[in-house]
Length: 174
Image 1 (cartoon, one colour):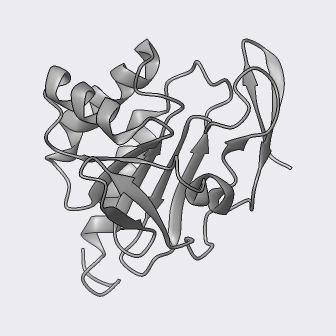
Image 2 (cartoon, one colour):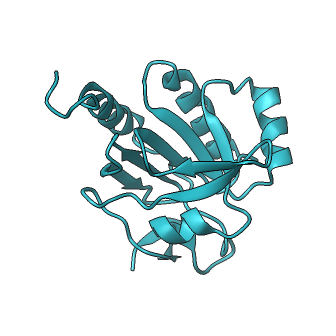
């Protein structure tokens, strides 16, 4: 079972553990317009956060929004926030270069990717994680932040996205 920490305390994560080299689970999350967004089946960076309504999640989303314009991979921020709250956040923060989505309905993504917090005060929401998926639906990068309050390694994630998009045409181009 995978774990993370919250202020130094170990938190267990529930769901199927997905690792680099695995086929990415294909699941639906809910967009701001309440329509489904399918993830896991194309060149994507999945930015998973507990809630956009926290300083670290907001900073992370702003950072990936700035960087998303420089990549051909689809960037999707997923939280347990309601779509209406996500919409207000995006309007207020000027988030335009990535999609925001919620896993509030069935927690399909949280369970499929093994990022559902199973205990502690934040039980039932997602931890902080980043997955980079290539055009064939294979996980090429995974980071579950050591502590939920830590920002991810942006450089590692963005380098993985760059690799995925540079080779997404046929797997042999450079």
